[in-house]
Length: 296
Image (cartoon, rainbow, N blue to C red; front, side):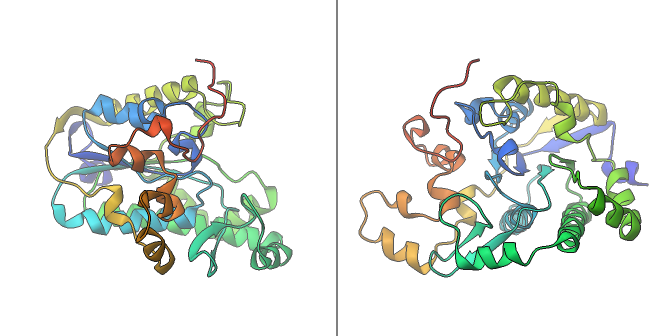
């Protein structure tokens, strides 16, 4: 039944590619993610525009939020998106800080707030088990949303759970859900397994070779599922359409000659947003930009 629903081995009708994940999907650590990150390679092969919702350090809560926000912004364009999700590690949590009016990864870069310290101090093994459970729930929710709207999509785990206690908890309490996710016709091999033998960058992310290798794997999986690709030229939502200014950023940009510098962090240092605006991203300081170009 699901094979019929997905219309496998037939035509993939597509207007744009939407991807979401963490730094591995963003292209952290390579010199030109706009051209060389695996989502960019896949979009070029498909011959469609790319909307990359991924961000370095992004956890599954943020992946869920950005996918939901984008999906409903794009829904009434009546187009044909194709989604690929690469889920992140379950222990990545985020916290909202009123001082900045933005979400922040707990224990991320920069000064750690008192609230983050409190969260870290009050975390235990059972809490990490619940975080893994939450990851599976969000993954399933996105699957159900896209399936319900007959949107073709692929998904993988880029950072699967390695902890034995958490795995035991998952097997005890979420066997049916885990099986459901694994049996979905869009489920791909864990991406970290696909590239495990490829040398990483100095920041332990995928190199240009790793991105190209992963893109080849994904492309073969697309070809396995569809005999034909039909590109349709239809309007679609872009990153700018999901930009929500905070009261602080609204105040900051009023008197700035370069307002983008004062946008929320997921935009003001986002190479894909710079590219969308037509800016020379090579001269910008974006998340994950290598200080020393990696060897080809």
